[in-house]
Length: 148
Image 1: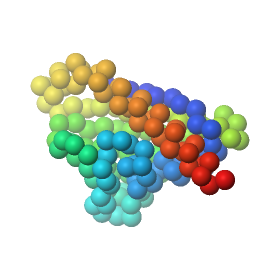
Image 2: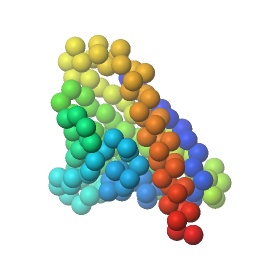
Image 3: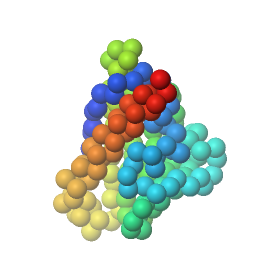
Image 4: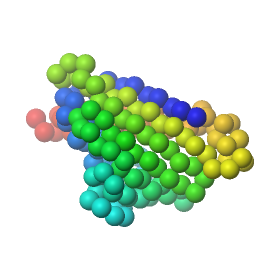
């Protein structure tokens, strides 16, 4: 199952890419994440891993930075016991002050039962993806106002 969200952010591409690619920022805009814990490597660099610890529940994702070609693209893999999520985030300048973030998440569920549950849960999976991207947009635009 794949979820794609496109959103325009009123900020320069390089700044959007920098803020998005820093895992330490995740708890600042992902309302369901309590903290980001480095596991190995330099946080946010290719090959590094970190845990995304939720505020509630026990679904901890381990994130691996697969590639970081900023300001163009970031590739991640998130793993939990029952799912692997491949993520490609692209940053496209639509003008010097506006960036289109194209976030594509591909979910691969482990096992037949999880695959069936994942198929049935598609709307419940796509909704948080959109919510996270909207929250990131607000975070970036607020950061830029604060910096000025």
